[in-house]
Length: 236
Image (cartoon, rainbow, N blue to C red):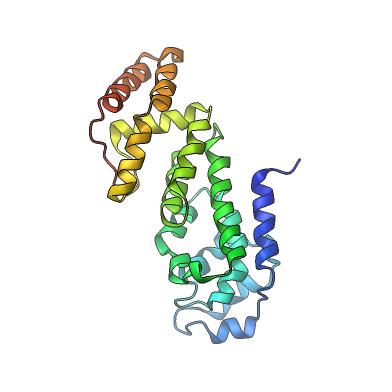
């Protein structure tokens, strides 16, 4: 059975398949001081779907500025996005930090290209927030991506639906120790209102009664009190 993530990834490959790779052009539009022939060879000798995170790391960081054109970036983009879910390192964070989509003015791209990217990000979030084994790194990174390129309201709606303990534990830790992502004033109001909603307070309370760990229960109780009283939260 095909997953939502698989379908979203295949849509990316289909939409962006028209951007064919030309190794000679890639060399011509890459900085001779910053990009070696070996670094180019590494990403052109394999089929796109076989490229690894390590092989695409330098390109994903340097694309457009010193490594190739926007069209070259679009060629590799489906694979870069696909690898996000499987990343165990800073590959997800790189995508956020280097902001290649905004740098390439992706909101001027065709509607179908924009839609495929937005659908993928939301599907990636869906896959992670409903996965009990998701890491804090994955959750934080995808939230940061959504804050830059996606729809925060849709993220919160999906988060509310999650039945995983991880989805709630992440909130508990964030309330007590601070969330590792930055927000605008409007985003802060949106998220804090959502966190203090009856729906989320009820989920946190249910977790309190289910846990058998006294230390965890105490942390849940403190977080619940903070949210119920709408005390200020830390986002960094």
